[in-house]
Length: 355
Image 1 (cartoon, rainbow, N blue to C red):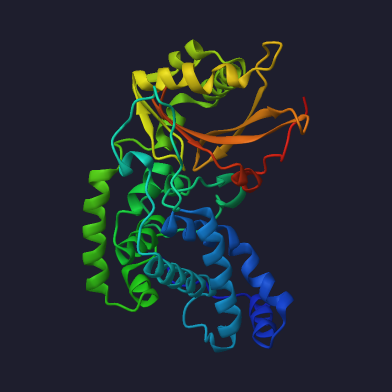
Image 2: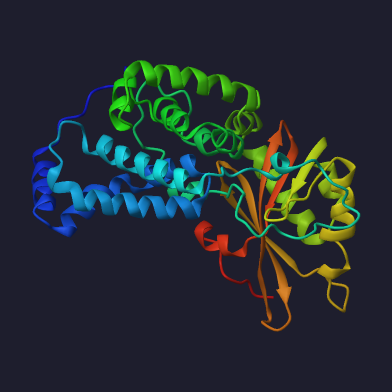
């Protein structure tokens, strides 16, 4: 069982009392240490950083408006998680459709005609800037089965979206946060047997959807030195337009997708796309120079890269695609290229790069 609430210190009691009297600065002092883990919780529930932003802000507003009624029968952290969970459940109920990866939307396509037209509606899971939001020091009970970074891996978040909303809430709170069944039952207004039943069904679903090995286990087996070498090789090959260099890094059945385009490729079609589209003459200037820059970053606990292409009118390299790669041993098994320049600020990536 997870430990009970830690009794608040005298300072925390004074700060809470001030916040309950309407002191906004005191309220911020209470919630600021918890913002990152609460935001990550919303992302796991919703699969979108933008939806997580909205839910997080809405839940904090709810907390501020109802703080005077908080009686301290649970910890403030548990109470805030309850508000965030129910805010996410409300949003899921309104949205109805869950977010997916392109491979879940339809079969692999041919790369010959190119990437096609993006979908108008927002259906895709979005990447998550773990260095900005995931809190390595966030507390989790001893019953947690997933570590912080495992809990935001693309495969894990994608699998979560297949769960009914309340099963999703139960599994995240029990398996990622380590809350007890009793705490979770109180959070979503149900019974302990109902929580245990939902958890059992959720575990069975995830066992069928998740890969055998997490990305964190793969990264640990590679070691920092090998990972840095791979990241450097990837950046160099992408900036030079070296198709062969990228292909040497891919597994045999590697996939490549580019949300919001629904088209995705596997195996030889990945090579065709790289050669005929991603690294084609459109990326070169009149002097034959490839005008692309790549900055390494981190997303979903995985290696990621912000790519920039030269814009003649602006006289600078502008954001184009945020790539998140998934590894299978020392090979890349998936390149997920989010063609959404608006994501770059969330990852601390610059709005443009010089020549």
